[in-house]
Length: 363
Image 1 (tube, rainbow, N blue to C red):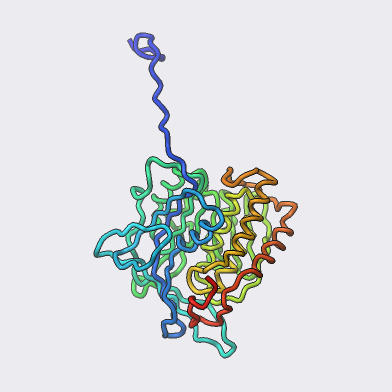
Image 2: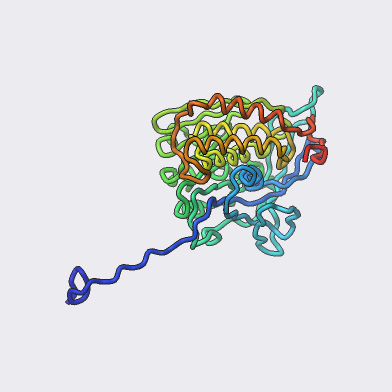
């Protein structure tokens, strides 16, 4: 006879709870090869892909044991700080061409780019993510359609909170020339995952395709407006976060560096608006250089010391639970002033157009 408490009245042994290894972050998104054109002339070739920009900030400000999942082809020619998986000898690394208008008489950056995906590496599958590790946060930063809906769902299962860049959800690619276009989020297979996402970042161009009023019912939506700062939306409110002045040379990767700075701030225990401010700061530094930026070490140290000081005042250490506090701290304006001062420690060589070689910038 079988009773509720086991066979013949004997208590059943309880299954042991599986023990998982814990890491700081899970960053998912392929590396790319970016070729920049001014008019019809190629003027620069760089490592691309959101993971390269994100890691550039995270590794400097919030170093922790994190896992990066990225795929490339056998033609990958860069020394990435977090080695990707080479999928096969016959596959190619994702390749983007970014076309900028001809240089105006006044010089400097001018106009919007036209972005084309020339080649795409294999997508990242749920099976490419670990089974035996759990993460404090996840960053879904696809740029070329490499993160599938089922992969994002698996990330959500593995991470306490997931931050998603909308570009990986709403980009489509012209079947003839690969021109990047945007589609409404509601029409994608990602839409049903919104209630399980913690933060969704979109550019001002992408925001109309996200439907902010709908998305904010389920998660925090951050819209980046470049030189005009950011707008943060959540279910019960919204606020504006100030920008930082910058001479824009190349906008590539600015949103990715924003994500790196924003997550770094959250990891250090900053409330959401203060973390957004840190994201704005690194986004502004990124547009002044071509490709993955080289940050001045004095500046990075200055910023990190301030983060340590703020963490000591509040939670006492880096790596605590990510804050869902949407109120600006009492020292938000002081933090803005501090970061503005830190920017003065940055030297980039002040390049004036896309012909500038990165080797002329500060190491």
